[in-house]
Image (spheres, rainbow, N blue to C red):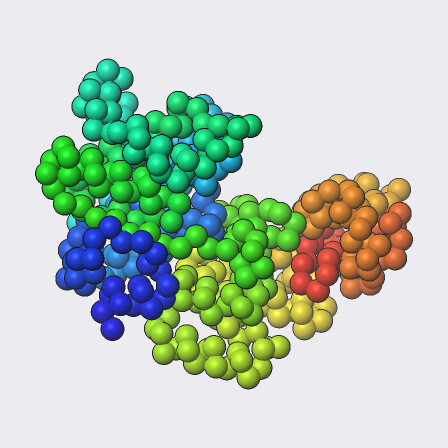
Length: 417
């Protein structure tokens, strides 16, 4: 199977700017870029599909460019957003860009000639506003910009609308493509389907200014089978690529808990397993869905890619200990997500509701109350029946730990010191 045919078979091609792109991708040696918005110091698994997209291109013989939007991050992309983002300071953006740079280096080979890591602040910093309007803005029809989905959707929202700042975002991203085409002979941009308007605007700008054909294709926006946003836990927190924010165990558990309806699709999206192997895994899972074979393979592959082999092995060992009923609390505490608490607070007892919210097993006090009343909260594997239940010194395991569980799959260790 050719490279482009494999992308299509995996469901990774939504929109293509020109039908000739498939042959170019199969031939290799294209320079292609994808942008990452530095709204935080870490990317999350919602960005992982685009990262894997660049990895696939590199493995197929192309040169990827990972662009961190130090300049465009100051504006905020309106695509897929219902209201304007909070503007970040230069110092915060600088920290976010540094964090994202370090993460991208774990996925792509940035040795000479292999891949590039760029920050669009480097070329926007010296651009004068009047020059930008004259050299770039004149090539954009307001009518065309109003027709773009990201703009039209916001114009129809009478409550929030769209600011001139966000309206200008399309010009900035288009100029990125022009700059990369000039500086690095970049001929392809990839992104999620919400980026289609920005991608085609950049293609059009390069054609108008340089008379050069460049290309774009989009990958799907990932949602779960029940319509929820991909990359969010039950407690509503994001699954981050930064181990300090989301541990290897938490990531492993997130994918292990994937819906049966999603597992095969996510294997095609996020792993490099060949299609015949994915088909075998799907067949095995269909025969014994209770073993979660597809989910386990998915969790193993993604966690290994993000956190490495050793951390993945620890995460899987911890999961086996928890779900197998093992009593090795020390091993569990070493790898499961933990929240520290001062031991002195145990003297008067700590409400279990406080521990649930502090550990983020419950997003709020009211949610914690509902979980307890519904019989879904456990302390050291004993169900809690009263909302005023307190944890005391007698609940400590190994002299330091208390194991919380919400539902069947969500574990957290409280460490007292």
